[in-house]
Amino acid sequence: MSDAPIGVYDSGFGGLSVWREIHRALPEESLVYLGDGLNCPYGSLSEERIRSLAERAVRELIGRGCKLIVVACNTATSAAIGHLRATFPDVPFVGLEPAVKPACERTRTGVVGVIATERSLTGAKFLSTLARYGGGVRVVKAVGRGFVEAVESDAEDAPATEAAVRAVLDPVMAEGADIVVLGCTHYPFLRDTIRRVVGDRPVEIIDSGEAVEKRVESLLDQYDMRASGTAAPVFEFLTFADEAYRERLRRKAFGI
Image (tube, rainbow, N blue to C red; front, side):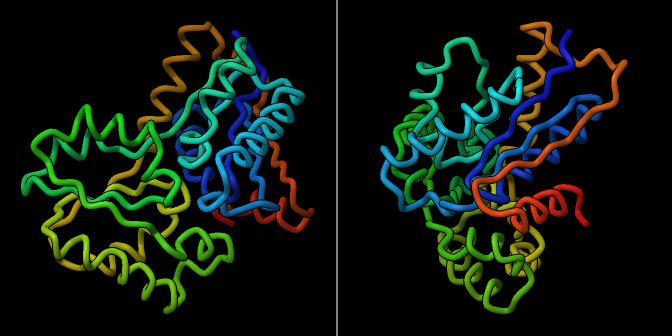
């Protein structure tokens, strides 16, 4: 057993969608969340730059005593997870990838939409997953332009955000997709807006949050690292931005 915290890292607010899944399922675990904020969004950054930022973040989380680290950012996972595992071989990592496997297994029309950042959609991890599970399924890929920025600016319900979501989703659904994968951890914060755009069309929206939480549980058991339950959990929020951003992270985590 270990009462050390679980670390969760993202470019900004997005990973809080994963943080919430972990907190919901494992309320006894302490959590340290690091939302970069200063360099968000990561989608258009070079792979070398993302690796550097991810390594800096992980060093910070290790310095806080984290026993396991979730890279709760699809873009950072795609660009840096191999580098992180090689650089910190004694730390268990959980990375993210779009939920292509369950989408391909559950589609009825044989068409799946995947909305993600440019970096994620061209990354080796996504392409290998697609090659492995996408046989016989047509996958329509689209970049969620403006999605991250909307979440970072607390504009999820703004008319301009709905227009941006519609511009991305309508062409995907016009191709016949009956499942749309949210391939960035920021995107679940737009779920209500996405549902409004989908309307009464029979389209299922899925993301990776629950699968990541299950993987966290698996690793905690594998390494005998679950919290003892004798100490009250502690929740800490870190950022490379300013104090105002850190406070926004805390408030968004708890839905305040």
